[in-house]
Length: 424
Image 1 (spheres, one colour):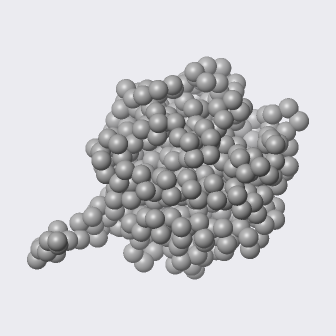
Image 2 (tube, one colour):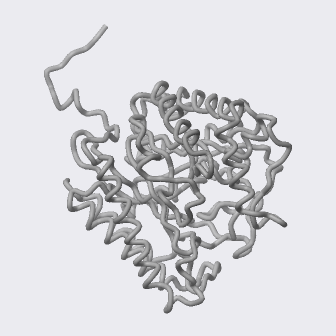
Image 3 (cartoon, one colour):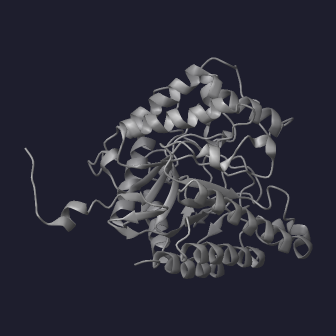
């Protein structure tokens, strides 16, 4: 049985984020945004261990009051919970087995976001180890006994870890285990709202992984992007799909290429990340000597990737960028003089481009720490600690933006309003 109406506006009102030409739209109107990374939202939403629904409500209300209505969240984390440097409890402690509290935490997060007209970019996997990710799938597949963890693990080596994680693309059983997770999540019905994920416009996009790198896998990596995105589209044709890529990064060894990595017709828009401090362009101990050149690098990176995205005719989102507190302090009350200056320049550049009908559609800063605080500044996260913006494999307090960072929050609010207003 079908129901027809002559009210065209009713027929077109879906609230899904869509792509038209080289921009995002919602119900035929342009959609631009200033968002944040809120990867731990599903854990806060849990009724079980590490959950804090009251805090989650407060954080969402704070973000909404700032005009931040786009959250990049995790929709996949892998156990076992005994492994180091992990966000725990994991959503999937074992292959195909789900922690129901965390799963319902994701339901709760999405249902509360829906009440606030927020949109989620849902990341399904991770090249890095802090959620288990590709490395854990390799172990689950029986292709290795253990993960060669990178720093700060004793003896850890970033190159060795990346080579290991990239074996995911050439390990069929690992890929199959992840594909089963895709099928499970995209076909889930929210236990709170009773809305199927695939029918929920609160989800803006599914993201293949956080910062997937090809390393030396070349065409195999590109094929994985295309086939995985196609699989998501098969199960859920309503939502956008993107990669979660950093762009070219600071190293040719990363095996990333914006044009090639987003060429698949199953990928709807491009993503980039800019990390001037992690990549060695900015030294907070020598801020006066390195900030200006680091800022130039960041703005040039944005411009370069904007041009590539224009050439392949797809919208672009800067979905990660950040900088430390002054002098790289991880203590919450330390001034954020440089961070405020950096945020304002990046936000202004994104806004200036977006307001000129650019392919640049929005940005998500890294990352919202809210009312959480590190147990030990610069120490490693442990179960029982507050979740903040810094994942468990990084010194706590590095890039987190707190609820009491009033000057930073004022800048966020200013530019969220400007970006939200474009074309509306």
